[in-house]
Image (cartoon, rainbow, N blue to C red; front, side):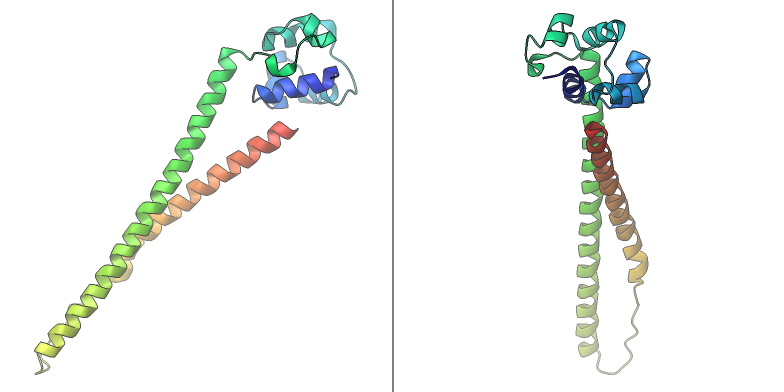
Amino acid sequence: MNVGEKIKTIRKMAGMTQEELAEKMNVSRQTISKWEKEISSPDLESAIILCELFEISLDDFLKGGRSVKEEKISLQDMIKINRRNQKLTILLLSGLFFLMIGALASLFIVALENAADSIKYMLYRYIAVGQYTSAPVNYGRLMAPAILLIAIGVILSVAYVIERWREKKGNES
């Protein structure tokens, strides 16, 4: 495996984008991209910084002594990855929670509407004189919170999908 492939593989294993790695190394994202595409190679100082950052020896990095899969990432990077995964999980669960509550509220309102229609029919049959006055219920007003909950759930779920897509696209570059 050549140096460019190693840099890309190690960076992806650490869950870092090119921009994040460039920031840690005080170089541009384009520099990282050139290294990974083998357009240029890191100088000795940059190679040492890479090795320290990913906790591998310079010999292993340059010669390929051990497999990239055995490389270690720093605790700080692991914590960062874990926090990001926690945030995305909370986002997904929140979206699903609001979808579920909205759907249940909608079902409850539909059941309430059917029960009210049934009661109206029974009362109409019992009061044959025609003096029955109905008390109409505004179901649109009752349905508004359910629709709002569903909308929030959809927005949170879409935000989760977008973040996962961005994360995947960032790791590919």
